[in-house]
Amino acid sequence: MKISKKATSLIFVLSGIFLIAISFSDSQINFVNAEEFNLAPEYQATTLDGQAVSLADYSGKVILINLWATWCEPCIEEMPLLEDLSQKFPQTDFEIIGVSIDESGYESQIHRFLDSAEISYPIWLDPSNEFQFKFRTIGVPESFLIDGEGRIV
Image (cartoon, rainbow, N blue to C red; front, side, top):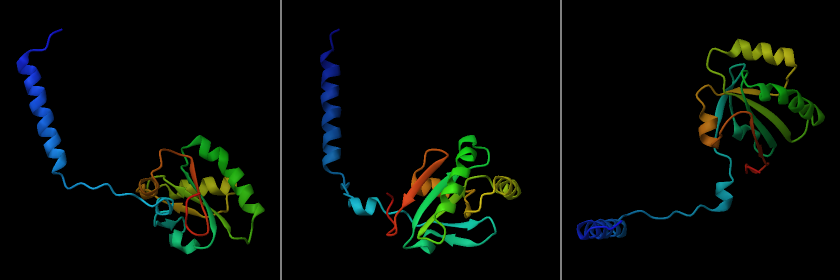
């Protein structure tokens, strides 16, 4: 396959324009400090009982945050294991928090499920998926371990 002189010239001209445009761009490469990258983002939510809460409320504690939903079978299967874990470390600097991504209006279904499964650790509501956006999650269930200094481990 032979490329015409016209096509070759056009490729060179477009490549030159592209290189010139790149050299005049204002973009900068911003390097992120690895320590900053590992910091958990600020996050506020509402508990199932309607209280405003924040990750900052747990400063100094190790937190296991579990993202879940009532329609997620693997989530439902792992919650009793998380409950057992929370019972093994009562009154310590370790806390498990469940973050439900169920839509608004599903609070009664969440309550029923938690009662039947005997889940006692705190449940936060995130119907707007803010947690998923801030923590860049890809699905449920998904868990994050945050150390006492607010770093994702």
